[in-house]
Length: 309
Figure 1 (cartoon, rainbow, N blue to C red):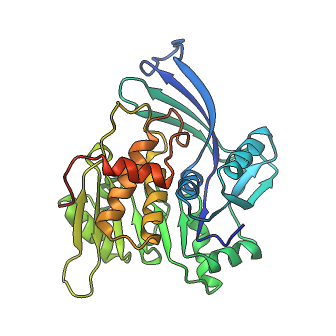
Figure 2: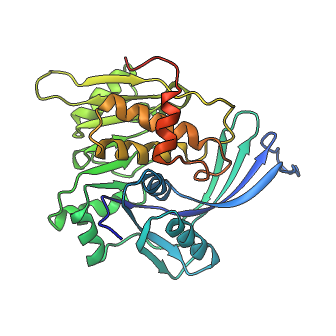
């Protein structure tokens, strides 16, 4: 396998997903329309998106020595992700129960993710990180960054900030990618643009907030301007209602990195990532409908006129 251009570090899960008409009430037995088992996890699904878009990618994480761990590993490897950094350790693999509401595609998550020890990096993992163009971490992978920097590795870091990160230091992050809700929780005063500017001032050169059906917005630091450049890009439009939004944000982040590795400008990179995230919503799980490069480009060509603001 070729050198990984992106190393994704964090959580990989087995998702048990059920499509339901509505969320059940206490003590209720509510039949599912359909159900399935599929691979999931924030950094792991971003890795699958990168692989699907033709970017050599490696995943570093932990699974337990159980049947779920074997399934998680097989799913990533089958998607073309280098899993040499995915260690099997004694314990219970991360599993998430997912309920998806049929009418809206919105999902409710019930994770069980504490059955394996924290990630620690082997020498081979550090070598992969040093050789990569980007590192992408989630809330589980973030704690290893101090060790990476202590090893003298300066590879740029992208952080999926959609989940809470304890003692987050944005000075160590090059690309910070929270949800709008997470960004506003961190910077509650003022407008969305104010929150983006505060986040950029804390260290990242690029902050990208996902906004669901409203698309995405970025703040890009410029050495020639007093304030960062703010770019809004609307969401892509599917021809049919979404089946599930599970994993859409993770796919967005993988596609965003793929676009930046293509040397696309920020507006085009957001459009690319919005499109990949939208297409991923065609399946019940978070990975089954991730597009390849040709499918994504064809989809974007069919989008109605309208651009960034």
